[in-house]
Image 1 (cartoon, helix red, strand yellow):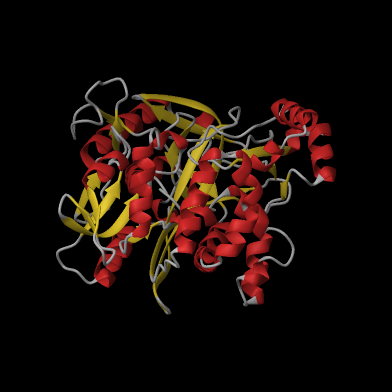
Image 2 (cartoon, helix red, strand yellow):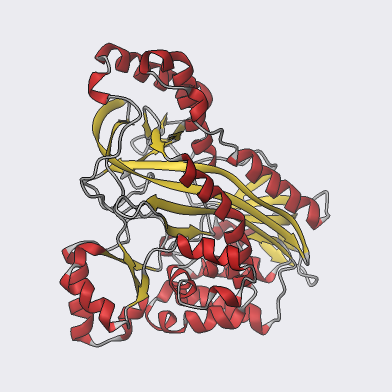
Length: 474
């Protein structure tokens, strides 16, 4: 998650936070903690040694907001409408190997992690490997810019689009709290949109498994060691780390992938998006093995690369969308949500970013939060890169900084609730499944709201910057 810091423009909250009786807040906090424990709105507790090793041991409620965040219904509908268009765009981009290779060629020289991914993609091109069945479980993240009132995209996630399960549970929790306390607060639980992500993602995985057409095959979830965010999407699965796949995986001459003797129909990546997921050559061997196989990858290496920051920036250039989409209305809808995006070889923009670094964010080709460069660090990094004159600038893109409105919120973490000024980011999930020319599924699949203190730059929930939230339509 990549949240930008907000200016002190205040969004009208859904309720007068100063006027809520303290006793009522404590009742809601207690009910929220009980509900979370009973309904699985929990994550592994990092303070418990066996957490992440033994299911059910060392659990704590997920970081959450006590009440939903207000969000304009018109912008909510816009975000939902964009989802299937972005799905189609990513699918078309993934098929254009030359575009991916050319766009990432400079990045490859200076970013070792992205270089390894590109090498795997190159091998697939050399093999003339075709992904006839393509599955994408995506999330497009947005912020509502206070000054322009535009919904602007932050990024498009094609790998490990997290929190689909917990996001649905937070929505259910908030609807329950407003059913019980809505009259006291003057709020209507029906203004919180239902969240169906987990069911629709499970449906997409199940449909992909069906398309593979082997009733004895399994869905394999690629996980990190000591994974603390455990959700199987309600599909029969096996869970393996990349190192385990390297040890236990085997490729048959016809491309069938076997792991522990079981045929793998679908590979769903919950890991593999960060350099830390590849501590040795073992993990890279496993990634290559899976890409070479006939198993359906979610995502394939081409989908993974299509979701990088550099490709996002390339797609924002004039006339590039027309290379992949024909419908002019769809193209206009996508362009409307693009924030300013530039490579660092745009000297005009680089100069402006040095002069006013607070208006820009520098982004490397990384997922998972905690990687972006803000404020004076933008200026210092750009000046250093100019002085060194190296090609390291190709590892980054510059993005217009989005300034959402600030609103009060109740943050709950480790059983403690506190009020603070907050900004939020809306993620809209989507699923895309295609078998050759037949599109089997292209749907918007629910949402994720993440809220963080307005004084913080970064916004990852797992990284400790933000909490899970839902939306209250206004």
